Image 1 (cartoon, rainbow, N blue to C red):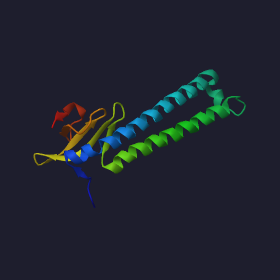
Image 2 (cartoon, helix red, strand yellow):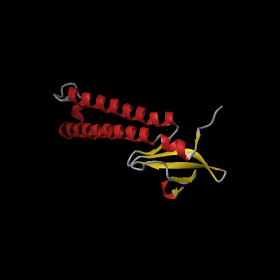
Image 3 (tube, rainbow, N blue to C red):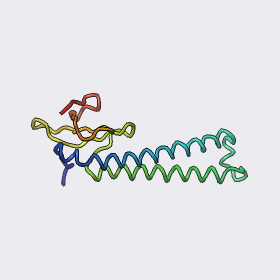
Image 4 (cartoon, one colour):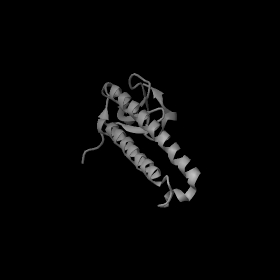
Length: 136
């Protein structure tokens, strides 16, 4: 069995342009999800439980928005899977946090990238999160 890929700083930094594109796409998807949720919520506020009943005039529209939400959430999942295929671990969507396994002083650590950074410039221990982030 093969373990996770271990990166050096240069290898992880080389992936940053791809990460930026992926997170830009995630932003667009998440905005569509927010807009669709607003529509779902509005119909639920107007009709209450009746929105699920066959005689509700807005039932088809409501069902369409629910299906759209499902499709958009699946698209978000596919985009985050792209990060995993590159060898990264998505730790947050907002602002965008990705960790890569790396080695520092002979110990397995996470090399840490935050959206907006041009490359991987920080690291933290495996048992620490973003708060334990330290400059390389």
